[in-house]
Image 1: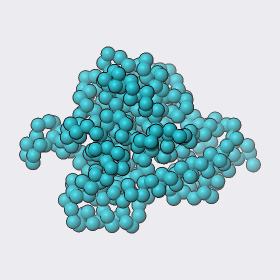
Image 2: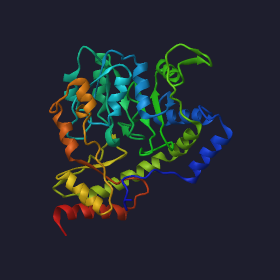
Image 3: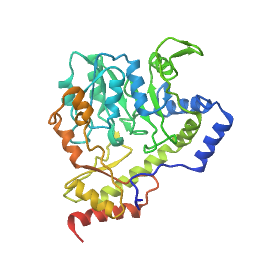
Image 4: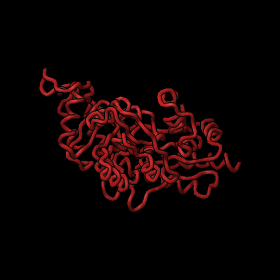
Length: 366
């Protein structure tokens, strides 16, 4: 086991007790804790509705099914976890890609405009690593072209763009509560946020077998409900989310201070007056990435690569859509150069200094 892990989920006695109480006192599925979690999450994000489901991937899938994109195309980034595009496929649509940008590794809006075609029905930006995408131009484009705008906020809980919480800007937004995220439910879980009453009603049915009453169903739905004990954990996590995120920002600032001036390493964007990131991951762009990763791991420092294979270069996407490589050069370069360093609320400042000292040793020698 690594002496300094890449991440570590928060799980306190209060969270364990909340789960235990839900198991003892509530319906096990869609119990009172689920209802309260949805209400509290919607209030936190600043939307009218929040509908829980079984995972972040499932949230994206249900959002696009509700948006009725079947048979059409959705534009997204190839530089994300494969679930981003898989959800589009699972909704009966075709994912099309537009390259990432060099500044924050999110969708390149200029390239995106050129990628919109007659079959395009939606746009799916990913707030990668917890750093918000530049949303204003995307909102303008989608309104002008009448495209549905769904935010993949699975790594961006609590981040903000021009004073608005990420998850409140598009037509819908999707969150993941997987254990590695900035907040978790103690397992898989997801949430869709929206201000649209019709979409919220449709998604609520879709996640619960398509039912309008116990044994009456008017759409083909899914068994995608959130368990009550998971929601109980999520409620406690949500109350602590701002504190967790502030700690992540403090740790990110320390990383940046310690690594500043290292020519072989490009540091991540830190945000500005318009953008408040939450550093789901602290990701550096570095020379000799794989050699550095091995060097750090040999010293007991766990690192990650998010993501080593762009979506369009995944074997199944090459098989389905004929990608050969070279189509999205920025994403392909990032996949060879980016590396995630340990970051989580309980990480100690001395441990960050230890990580940074090891990186300097790799490049500069002792």
